[in-house]
Amino acid sequence: MNVPGAGDRLLQIERARHAVMDEGRSMTDMLIHGWYEGAWIERSWRRCLQSGRRPQDPVGFDVIPAQQLRRVQDENHTLVAAARPVLEQLGRAIASTRYFAILTNQDGVVVDAHGPIDRNDPRATIVTRIGVDLSERSVGTTAIGAALTELQPVWLHRGEHFFENTSCYSCAGAPLFGPDGDCVGMLDLTGIDAAERPELKHLVTQSARSIENALTLSRPHRIVLRLNWPGRLLGDDDDGLLCLDGDGWVTGSNGAARQMVAGLAGAVQGPIHCSELFAQPWEPLFDLARGGEQVPVELPLWSGLRLSALAQPAGDARMAGSRLPLRDVEIALIRKAVSDARGNVMEAARSLGISRATVYRKLSQKPPGR
Image (cartoon, one colour):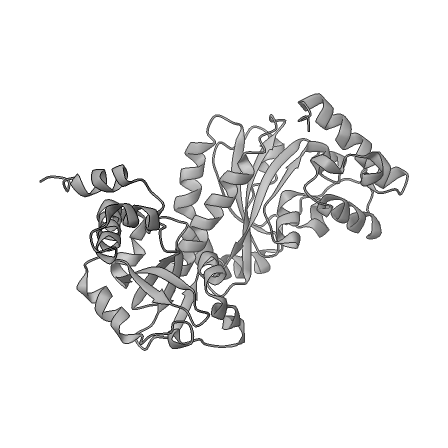
């Protein structure tokens, strides 16, 4: 399939708008569904039309009342604090792209913004004010409204927005899920009259994952379990995070953990004890965390599947992204695989999904400063 150029894309968008908004037809009638990842844009357009809105209507970009704004800021203090380091990193990543970052709560109200925001451009200032309502009901089809409605990452370019007044924007958005699995907001990257950058969808998705991990670790806990499938190296944002209190009760988890451990899906119904998740005694996990050896172990699930896990005390876990000795964990994992294979390096390499040469090279590395 040929990838359309910038001019072709804008023409296809205009044809789609004409089909849905002027003729009442489906955009798929225009044979353009191949470059749409789904029908979510059309669903959003139709919701706007059904609410009595028209593309030519003015957009107010209204700020919520002061009393409501104070309540929103109080309710989202933890979200803003968890996201601030990520927003600062994003600012560096997109500094030369004419895009900037917007953070909203679960209702699409802006609670923070960061990056190269051109304050001389009213189109930038108006959407980055704290308290402005950027939900679908307020400003029509946008990445913000779409991410919060569809609960998935999205990319939206110019005329794919519903209102003509918002067709100057291009944006990527991803929903944010809290430690209990509910949607708590979204992260958006917006550009004004900017070149199409669909790769920003990947960047915003990764950044959202980092914010979710920070939110999980902000929950009170005694230890955190970093989880992944056997053979995968532990120590980055792809890990599942499971926070436990001193009695083994789950206080929070990130999206990766909820996908790996089916039992966590019941967290919305009430507290879950880790003994309901792992088919082994839970007390040794605390001994591992106190030992400080940073050696991964395998945990059996009641389903029969097994996970690789690293147990960390609360203080270390909170700074896991910057303090986790990744090379030490990697070498420990390789040594364990060799030991489990009774010294058979080829078998150990095969179990880890790496080459035998890599096993030898990693085991021959000296720790830094020695």
